[in-house]
Length: 374
Image (cartoon, rainbow, N blue to C red; front, side):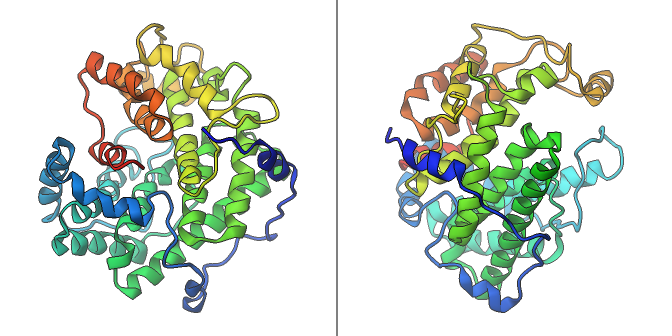
């Protein structure tokens, strides 16, 4: 894999100040600044190749789900809140139900690319438009992390969407990118501890995807800086991550690495290597994935959350929330290793072993992206 170490050190040491206050959403006139050829993670040329995979098992599975999704009306909410709550508390249940729209956007968009059928495009646009009309970005990255599906759906459908939807989506993305980048800069100045754990990793993912989707070089540079800074404080020399020691759980290793590898994949799609270039401390995302691999293959096991320093983990275990007690199950790393395969094919045997040993299926959309050579 090509390395860009000199570029990294130049960028890492650069000072990238943000505006003193979170940027206000731009006016409609501002939305003309993004390029129609910009993309977050899926280049147009790759999107065009997806139709060649229409007869594959992953495509057949996805299209079956997309056909079911066609009849489901959007359920946009002004606010979603699942972070920090147990099942049936607050608005958690209705938020989880509404959030099913987010992967639905991507499934419908992928179905459109597989078939060219305008019904899927229209359905995907209907859900995207409904959400950007109603939802207010609140900059809680745990609640909003799955909005990456909306951004990837936009990659796949942008050229076919109406101009009003494109303008609304551009405004939405700019609000997201500028707001998250501002919050990260503000908290670094205050030395808030969220700037080294999974919270920061999810913010970086959303900011990176939004910045690339906008094609805004200034925002991309700031996201790049924050990504490399996060690696330097989040990943230790042996490849373990900060969350493992705070939460005593492989669950949170996966949860921390998934957003980082997604951001790295977006950078790769734009010709940059964020995956195996080490931070000044010597660690990289690649090292962190390699640290996890023995657990993913079942060669090592781990009893989850026994010594977590976060009280809410014990509350979830007491409430019987799945995954917060007992041994970690390797199938929970399948999506992470699907992203890893997209970064480097050397992880393909690991992914296949996890699938074979656990009996759990991979994500069809990620499988299709691998098949077309993303």
